[in-house]
Amino acid sequence: MSPARRAALLTASVFLVALCLRPALTAVGPVLPRIGADESLGEAAQGLLAALPLLAFAAASPLVHLASRRFGMERTVLISLVVLAVSSIARSYTGIAGLWIGTVVIGASIAVGNVLVPVILKRDYASHVSRATGIYTAFITTGAAMASIVAVPIADAADWRLSLAIWGGLALVVALIWLPRSIASEPPAPVVADAVPLVSVWRQPMAWLVTGFMGLQSTSFYLLVNWLPTIEISTGISERTAGVHVFLFQGFGLIGGLTIPRLMKNPTSQRAGAVTASIPILIALLGLLLAPDLAILWAITAGLGQGAALVAALTLISLRGRTHQETAQLSGMAQSVGYLLAATGPVIAGALTQQTGSWQTTLTVFATLAALQLLLALPAGRPRPTP
Image (cartoon, rainbow, N blue to C red; front, side, top):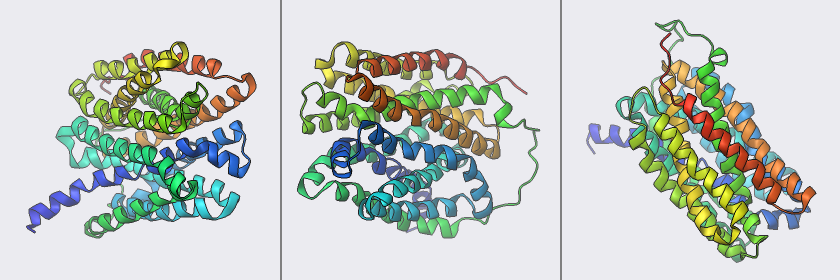
């Protein structure tokens, strides 16, 4: 293999990391009732279990750029893949304590990829950020969809523990593929002052707008990926059919993520893309509330919106950071605060449903949040003021 081709393959391997960033999470939703039955967890506890990775995202994300400064981005990603592989297996086979602790560690390890991969994309694909982000999210969605569709069949053939643990093997394979890139990477460079004096991202209004958009789209995503099967089962849809609908949700997310970059090409304003991505999410949640018999239509509609909204959020992070350092800090902030907001979604959904005995109030609340996302898309997508 020529050096040029080998370098291209190493660069493209960043997309394989994306395959590992959702299966350990999306495999849980379709078998969550089985986990609850085996481990004596009520709806609220199941919602907390689903929310734990997001809380770990929130806690770990601001620290990721510090680790990357010390070890370099490639080496930090490699470590996170190995930890993800080990914790995925431990979660299934080390008892109830391992279920909870392993879930937290899984979330922390995935947070590394969530934060660093957008920075790597900006560095390696500087002139095609939105397109590269679309491909990256397509890989994320593919991994998420695979885990959703096979979770129940694997649980039927073996048990839910294997349907979760098997994704640790994927992380280990990708770690081995990533290893040459890690070895070939340059050691972390000393931190130097930026050419443009930068205000902390925590004090930038635009950073908070991007963070809010990221958090709201994540909130609806994790509500649906964890609870959509249970919502549909409560209306009389079979467990297998509900699992297929989650697969469609993820699969059409792939289409949404690959098409929205056409509206995100403008190097300054991304309003059109952010607004367009937000509308289907609102429609889908209202549809589940008002016409649940059309669940398959709402799963597809939500998928299109969620795939597009994730690309829009990550593109905003990449484009609103003016340097690699600021982009890493913005990525950490947006994913920390954003996922902290998102973590409340599964918990609130479980608690509201357990208290009211139906999903009507829950869907009303989350449709309202989707409307807020749509409103927030306008200022978050506007051109960034020059300093």
